[in-house]
Structures are given as structure tokens and as C-alpha cells.
Amino acid sequence: MLPLGHLSASYLLTKLSKKLSLKEILLIVFAGFVLDFDIFIGVALDKSHHDLITHTPFGAIIVWLILVLIFKNISSFAKLLTLTSLILHLILDEIGYWFYVLKFQTIVNQPQISWLYPLKPLFNRSVPSSFCSIGSFIWLYLNNAWANVLLEIILFGAALLILGINYKNSRINK
Ligand SMILES: [Zn+2]
Image (cartoon, rainbow, N blue to C red):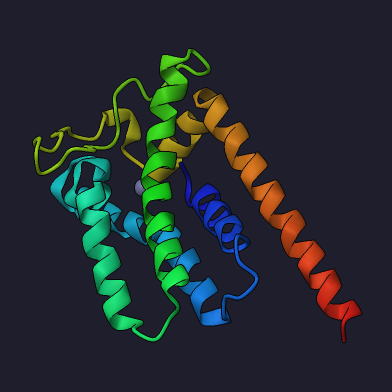
């Protein structure tokens, strides 16, 4: 999934509670896309960033522990939503493969996440040559991962709608 979908999904997650502070909301949204910063490591190692430790539940828990150590004074529910946001990222990255299995789209023909790491080894795949630039990857994605793209549009639309409603309500309450 592209960052826009992750961003939208994690924003929607923050709507599960009305009691979150702005700092907590920003942390949960940040947790929704922070794992993708490993793309730079993936590029350096010439492998898919989905095959790095950071894109496993084990890695997500380590990232979560670091985040809750840095942001100590947040509520327990915000900590739980931060972890949920990290795991949701992995689910949304894997969902393309499930869409492929269900024949909703023609790409992402391999599992994306090593769910059982470290009990099972990480996948070790190099990046396909068709993904050699971000531009060509996005082009391939938009043309072939239709179910993914539809899901991204739905998530973004829902996030935008709720953001708009919240903004309108905050102006009415002033
Ligand atoms: Zn990812």
C-alpha cells in the first residue's frame, strides 16, 4: 500500500477515541507510516523493504517499544492504538497478496510479510527490475493493483470526510 493509504487508515484509527490529545493523534498517525522509512535500507541493500525485520510484527513491536519509551506520558489507550497502527500497516501491506489470491488483481503474487519471524526466517527477495524506479513502481501499481487502489481511495475518502466533518464541527463550536 502507498503512504496515502497508510496515512488515511491510521488517521481513521485515531477516531476510535474522542479523548486523545493532539500529540497522541500525531503519534498514532506517525506509527501508521514510520515502518516505510526502511525503504531507504531496502534500496541500499537492493532488496524489498517488505523483507526487512522492520516489516514484521517482531520489528513493529520493537519500533513500538522505542516510541512508547520516547513518548512516556501518553495514555495506555494511545499506546495500544500506536501498536495497532503499526500492525495495521503490516496488514495493509499484506492485503495486496490476499487480493491477488482472491483474483481481485493481477499483481502482488507473493506474501509480503514474514509474520512468524523470528520463528521462521525472513523472505529474501531482490526488487524486481520493473520496480527500478519509484515512478515505474507506482505506474505498475496503479495499473494492476486495482483492489489495492480502490481500498486506498476508500480509506482516503473516508479520512477526508471525517476530517471535514471534524473541522466543520470545531468551527460551529467556536
Ligand atoms: Zn510498508
